[in-house]
Length: 156
Length: 116
Image (tube, rainbow over all chains, first blue to last red; front, side, top):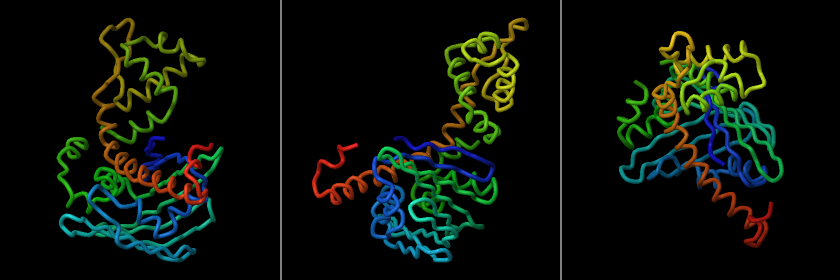
């Protein structure tokens, strides 16, 4: 059940993962704030104190993470562009400290009690994507969190 | 290094199989074509893609022109995405735990998670 990460185009990253759970629960875990807060907590040492989700087309969402050690925070927010119950959610996303907007497409499918999640993130440009991937999705978060030496080596 | 070319090259199962074969040692086009049910020109096409991505190169033997793996390029491509992958893996492992709890609560008994 390992995560598969692929680059379907210049601007995108795709994450694929199977879960031994029915789709309804995986859907709930992505759309109910009290559940999202329990797992989308960011890197080790971070928590997710703010999670607001207005699950309607045009409805907003707002996430905030906090580093428990130094109190630094990082946020992202956006709008729901498409919501197809149990199947598909398309959101726009703006991350604090970043230019531009990403478009995230979450697709869930279920077979034999296993739910497959495919999350495609379109960062709008190759530069934005490479930057986001290189820093582990949450650039601002990771930057304040730990040094990026290993990473710089990986991109050279 | 062009990471997009690298990942495009890695996206194909035949090309991944070719890389796996080359990980055991260099091989000629004919040797590489053998285990696959596709023509030698088709294999050559895959090899071109892999070569363009810097994942393989042509060995010194001018007659046999063996292909060999460029392990450093492959390692670099892996390292680039590894950190990102780890971030999601850690997140999804927490989600696994949450889903298990949810299923237990829904079933009202702890045996539910063992059911398939």
